[in-house]
Length: 88
Image 1 (cartoon, rainbow, N blue to C red):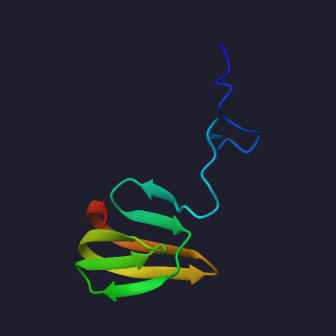
Image 2 (image 1 turned 135 degrees about the vertical axis):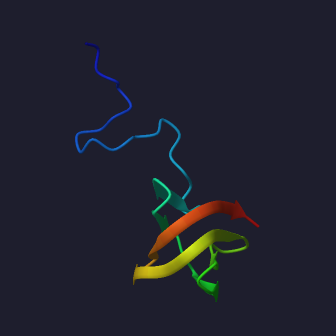
């Protein structure tokens, strides 16, 4: 079987077009969790809507039972039942 050359040694996807440092990186784990790297702050937080500042824009996470599971540096992890993610 031919190995996909876009996967690095750690098994994570290595994009041939790396994002600029001013952009955010988002990983969605099914509909139960999301990790956003590049967070500049939490603009709004409720159990149904969380809005994360990523500079001049926001990432809005919508759903139910949403909680900020962790924040460390510029990385925030949100858990709950995620029904939508928007850039606004």
